[in-house]
Each structure stands twice: as structure tokens, then as C-alpha cells.
Length: 198
Image (cartoon, rainbow, N blue to C red):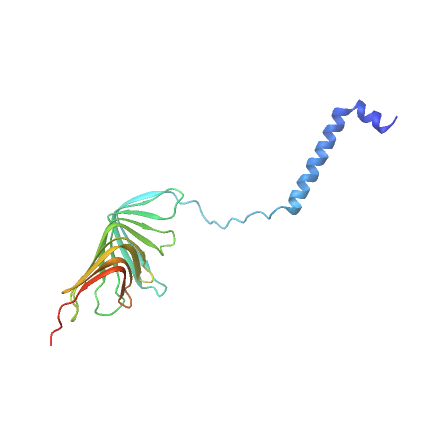
């Protein structure tokens, strides 16, 4: 009896064996050429969402000094998202200089990214610093600020106004480095400076 006649008489078992052999070869090729299994570097159970009332946070810089203080009457971390959502946050940006008061501020809403390196203050943002030595009190009014608390930097594309004593400076778009007291207004800048005392 020839192989051809044998296969014709036993079509169903022969097709089943051929499909099983093809599937086995395909699986072996997948194991051989396929990507390595992904390693799971996650340690511990997944974090659940939570809501805090009257929350207070302090973030520390690489030297272990406070780089940012934040308070919010309502803080929320949503399921599967490691960032924080804040209602009516108030904050303090340390001056990092002896004898210089911290910047105090408030906004309508806020958002902090997972690593705590970026902060978005949404809605109107008011910041002020108390007078010290021969420098009068300062106030900044703007909206929608993006801040990097560890570097003490912030910026916005919204209109901004700074008032310090009799000096008034306003413009559209602002960048500020609070460590070296550098303020940059980007467009449509207007300024009023009082005369200096002789």
C-alpha cells in the first residue's frame, strides 16, 4: 500500500497530526526568535487612589533641605495615576538665603507630577514676599504657572505683573529663577520705576 493511498484513507488523523506538528514548530520558533519576557521591577502592592483633607507636604532637595511646602484643603490621587491633584493650594518657596523671607502663594488648582519635580498651578496665582532689610515687599500676580520647586524656577505664558514698593512691571509671559532673583518678562513689557532718593 502506498503512502498516498494510506493518507487518502486516513485524511482526518493525518491532518490533525500535520496541524499539531506545525503548531509545535511555530511555538518553538516563537520561543527562539521572540522577545525576552519583560522583567517586572515593581516592588510591593499597587497604590490605590486616595483623598486627603487639610493635606500638608514638604519636599526636600538633594542636600536634605526643604525645597517646597504645600498645603491643600483637598488633595486627590486617582487610581492608576501617581500624580496629585489639589484644590485651592497654598505654597511656600524657600528663599535659600539667610535673612530673606520665603515666597508665599496661592492658586485655584494645582497638580504635582509622580516624581514631585514639576508643579502646575492653575487659575489665578498670587505670590508675595515680605519686606526685608532695605527691600520692600514684593507681589507677583499671574495665572497658570509651571514650577520646578527643586530648582526654585517658574514660568508662565499668561500676563504677569510684579509690584515691589513703587516699582511696577507687567508683561505677557514670565520666567523667574527665585534663587538668583532673576525675573524675565517675555512680551509687551511695561514698567514704572519711582525716582531714586539722593
